[in-house]
Image 1 (tube, rainbow, N blue to C red):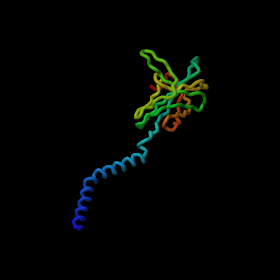
Image 2: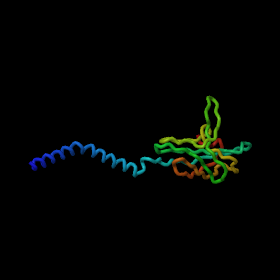
Image 3: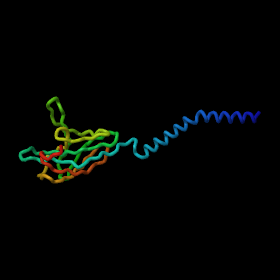
Length: 171
């Protein structure tokens, strides 16, 4: 009888494995794939933003004591980011600013950050958003200056920007 009991117990174990095996195997495979996804940095953290060289508006004679810098910032990741500040090699205040549209009119507003949507871009233009430079030193057309852009999630970016008169600005 003990021999029959051993055979019967073996059958029960094999039946249990046949029933439980596929779900346990699927869970193990999912765990391996998720571990790899996280290990390569594709989960739980934003991909750093990217940008190309920008431009600075050449102040015209008689204009106010400020100018603006413009960049296009791309976010290749899924996690939204924000441009939280900037500085430039010539010193002085550099502050994010955006245009608030109110019907046919609108107004400018300094802002603590400019959004860079996940999978999208922040394209600064004189009509939308820029970096206000208060009291810039004398600048000349064609001059290149270096900026450091800071973000909520991404590391700082160091970029050049060319000083351009309004007539030569990128469209």
